[in-house]
Length: 245
Image 1 (cartoon, rainbow, N blue to C red):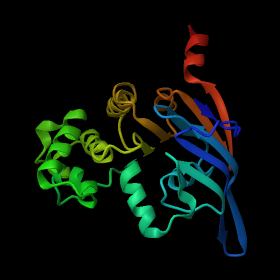
Image 2: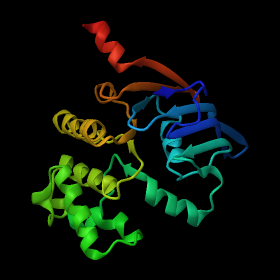
Image 3: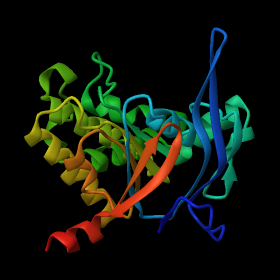
Image 4: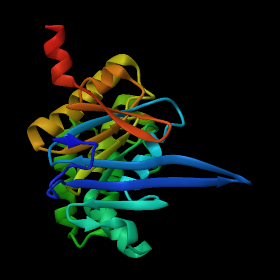
């Protein structure tokens, strides 16, 4: 269940309370996020929508420990991350967060296998164990036959699949997807959303997705809207489907 009113019972996988984020631009103070509350349970699939500059990516970066809030707290799987030090935060991200980016962020001189293996180099897994994890992740995304291909030898959709395999290879607590279909044509975008939807349904992954694409957002369990730093819960996707039928 997803809640934005702060009424969760404390057992949520992701728990956000009073989240504020401000930036200083010269003499001007930019208030990006204002007093956000959010509860997300394990296995939820949440889409965040809103105009450019509404704070969607800022929120994702805060949830993933890539940035620190001005005020408020973020708790994930029982860990309150807003006061972790740099090294502790790095280890926390490696254990809990899988990132999927719009521009894939693959390293061009590494093969698909090597790109997917990167997060595991921060773990204590043996070489054989890393290979097993990587092969399984590539199989899940349907690219077992592209193991030794370089990014330049892959289509955009295949590159994003490698990015998703890299995100899931360490079996993270949740996935943060920032415009994962933004650089793809409709067919490839639909295939990527099929894959993300399958990760939720078949592998019980928790997914938080930022998107401008209403077609992609429709795949989520619930769509939340950010406007001027304020989070508003929209109609649940299953409710919209029931209305249409």
